[in-house]
Amino acid sequence: MSMFESIRQGLQDAIDFAEGKPVKAVVHDVSPPDVKAVREHVGMTQAEFAAAFGISLGTLRHWERGDRTPRGPARVLLNIVAQEPKAVLRALSGGRRRQASSPSPA
Image 1 (tube, rainbow, N blue to C red):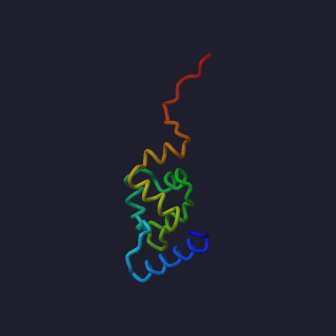
Image 2: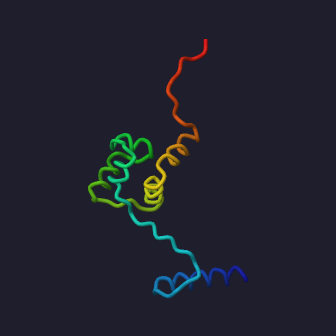
Image 3: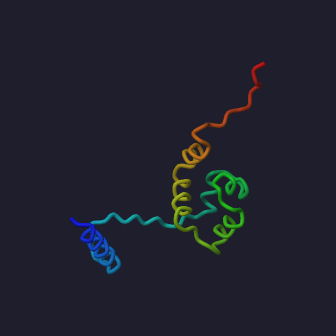
């Protein structure tokens, strides 16, 4: 298949999808999570949650009040946090687990 044919087929798939016709493409529907419920499930304050996941505190508050809705990567991240918060926190910390501080060797 030529590059032109590939682009044409992709465009036709997009049109078919928009018209409600069945398509071969996989479409992921990432619904907006209940941000406050996710934060409470993780057991963090607004400030802790915002800092841990790189979200501005103001944006987090807007999401929780329903003034705004998370979009794009933020929506995906919040859905993953809702399912696997420890894995996300571990990944964001570079894979290191927090350990109780111990005296440094002398």
